Image (cartoon, rainbow, N blue to C red; front, side, top):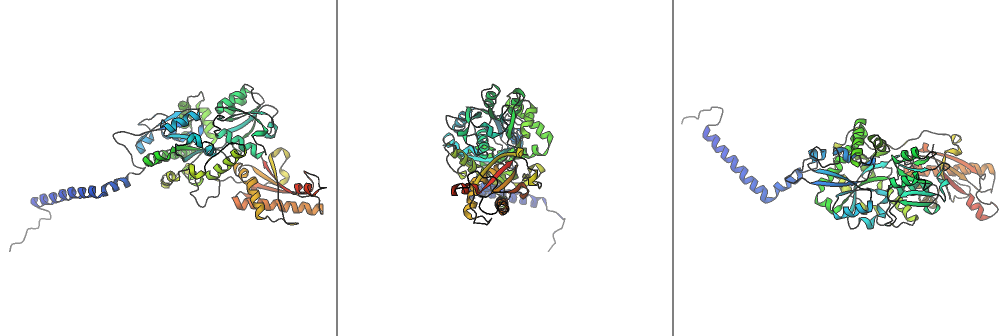
Length: 525
């Protein structure tokens, strides 16, 4: 039998037969994949937010903002306010974003519910006051975009140098009186009053529709003080001689957090698009945090987009008055990092809800009713690796001696009657609960302020021993807050006043009980 010639390759007829086999295999394989659903599942798996989602009709997401520097990340990533193919949302994720601007929140929320807008700005602390305005929109705060870090300020006329001076005075503040709808300014004002042991009953509020109108009322001399946004605080200082900036959110940085609300049903219909919106926005925040050139570009975009007469320089100052929240910040704030011990949006919501309730403003729901952690969980941490994407560090303090503190350093002081076992400095569980309820929220909200803890006793016993005991009790309170909340120990100073500063007569049992107390003093310098 003759041997076949080995040529090192296939003959032409063999190549043709092999090609027909491959084509037939592909044809029947695709038919099987379609009929079995495997092709659809593979496509679904591949269609992540890192892929473009282009189709015959490009989705346009409509986002409603109000003029504020904290919203810089989204418009920056979009390369402007207009829906455009030049947008990175289009080139990286395959959809377009159109940003809109409105000051009347009650009206814009109605328009959001009607479907005119897909996404609406919102502040986490005031969500519980807006159930009637938001329902039945199935509102969910999908991701947080900024933390006020100086952008909100309480200003007062000449002669008003402390918050306590505002008792009985007129304060202009943005507030939807008809709907009793909270907002960042009102949340901030309640926080400031609470730290000073005050409520809205102690002052005369003059409600205005927007923060800029509150600033205008101050400039016109209609009020003694106003809660305003940056850069309006500088405008007020420039136009009203003698204006004092009583406090900015630089000193209460854990009270005001803004984010983006979406309709939960809309999210479930198009999850990849809303995940892409969050992914791009947080990328933008990281880039602005990371480079001054990106921050300048963002300020220019906001000035042109908001078109409210504020320059790019004004908005650069406004951006500097916030912390643009990164992906890692969001991961911490939404409680997704088990090792994180700082402030969370759940705490912000609960603290603010308590403040609103104590001031007679009705609230509804819990944090879980308004949050959508699935959006953040879907994002890939590997896409956020620049320095600007890292989580913000908790503030640390250098050690300070108690005798370095002067009366002028005091911003606010509150005291609580604390029961200690006779002659001892240990805290009971009941005492810990009282410290939690009375002071913990304020200490978290005013996290950048130093704290002086002063222990007091009645006049029973030796004065020298009472002074030592009162200092030990103050130290026990410090230890509780450091261990329970992870605060920097150097933030706290302790002092024992003994029986030297009574607030009631020591001649009665009731008076002596009032004098046995612990005082918490926030220090502004």
